[in-house]
Image 1: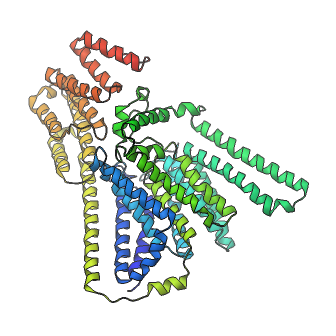
Image 2: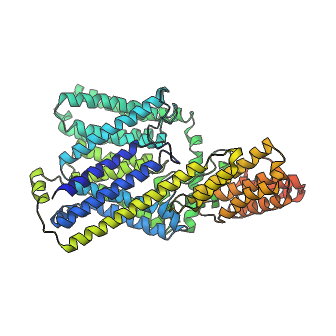
Image 3: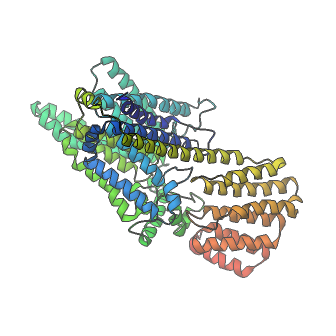
Amino acid sequence: MNTFFIRAARIFTGAALLSFLLVTRGLYFPFITGKALYFRSMVEIALFCLLSYLIYNPGYWTVIKERLRHPVSIAVLAYAFFYVLTSLTGINPGFSFWSNFERAEGGFQIIHYVTFYVLLISTYTTKQHWKWLISFLLIETLYVMLYATAQAFGIAPSFFIGSASQVAGTLGNASYLGGYMIFIFFYLYWMSQNTKSVKTWTMLAWYTLWAIFVFYRSKTTAALGAVGIGGVVGLLLLIPHLHLYYFEKLNKKAKTFFYAFLVLLISFITFGSLFLVSAEKGGNILEAFNTRFWTWGSAYQGFLERPLLGYGAESFPSVFDMYYNPNHFGRESWFDRAHNIFIDELMNGGILLLLAYIGIFIAYYMSLKKIPSGIWRIIFLIMPLMFIIQGLTIFAILPTYLMLFLFLAFYTANTAGFLEETALSKLMTQRKQLTFTRAGGQAVIVLLLLTGFGLTYTIYRKNVLLITSAVYNAKNLDQALNDYEKALQYKSVVGQSELESSLFLFLQNAIQMAQKENPALPRDPNFMNRVLGMADKWYEPTIYPGIKNHYIYNLLYMAAFEATKNPQYSEKAKALAKTGEDYSPTRIEFIQIQARIAMEEGDQKELGRLRSKLQLLRPDLSI
């Protein structure tokens, strides 16, 4: 019993990695919500077990304390502190801390990622522990790759989700899969260097070939570029090592051959990566990155407004809307991330958080000297480099963060030094007498665990209610509205904003379907009062985060006007569009709504103003 809690903490920490596999079709955003809720639950249980163990075995704290003093650990904890701090000082602290169903990030999730890191360095303290954990990760990745392979060949069972063009496995996005596989290659190589079994080595070789296929079929520009640049840097760093330890013993012809081979290999990796990236982007790389450049331009303008503490996590939509680049219209028009890990941190927490984030990598490279010189130091050097490169055009989310913190914990364990099994066993079996204080401490820990589970359940329940509500049937409108009412009234720290947008879209669809089936129905005051009354009740006049909900609510009133020609609805739609234009002057969506109303009302003066403005923003468009 004395070692039960520490072993349980280790098991539940490892079990958190199973979140990669979860695809919860019964939840809103099936590739994210289930993963996040499961991951949090495992981390909370593991933390409960570790704290319970420390109550009875405080001597083990010396092991944890030593690893918490590691430069990477200090940097990771500092990052978490500033992330939460800047979330609470942002423009929408509640949303910044709790996030939503679609992303499931924010300050609350960052606390769990960092807790996961602390659990790893606290419970996985021997080399054997890490061999078990990495073996577990590689085994579960087989399912991720099977899922991706089924997508690639179009033979996926009905319960699989995804397309054959860019496979994503169980991660939901090809970009996440590409970044995930980079770390898998690292662990495959580490395992191959820590086994003497020919059978195991052969299995790992076949596994690697399959992993290369899955990585390629993800067709992820960012990951392909990261591997290309990382490979070239690695080879360039490898040349002095090879010359010092191997080439010096060769004759002149052999040296020439090997150097020529390295030059060819570097050229192949460089131009091969460029070719694959170019092919994926239709032959024009710069054109494909235009949306990123426009988004970064909006982010820069936002940064000038709040340079020190930023806007708070999850608040980029507000910045994007305020400084919207009209070139986005007709392409990708709604962004909730800057698609650059450094710019995202800058927007989240200003210079303060960006420096804290960069500090993780500075601490990493400062402690790299603890890795013996040679191939392993080169590999450990290029791993963060590849992560950074692939993050220059995409953003971080659960699969990305999880692999990053897992890798950082693995690196910390390597550089802090693995414990010997005998020393650890002796430390773990030290017995301490149970006291009332310790029993009281465990009661507090249990209370915290129950609080965590309570939050998880309410978020899960809100998500289920949203799914239940988001189905329209013309014959049971009352039941649908009752379901939405029940879902909107349900108290949860996450999901209200998404429920509101779902409601507005549903009501808009209800009007349009009613008009199609019975043109007289929308003119029935009873029907329209029920529909718009429900929307008015739950509409929150806020532009944080972003103005998308306001826009959907605006479209609802536009649909009401077009179905009934009631001037009361056109005035409301016009006022909403004007509010949207005031907040986001360059958003063409609001110009279009006002133009449609002006044409309907024959207001040539207003129409002229809108046409002139549109010509300035996008000369290629017309009203």
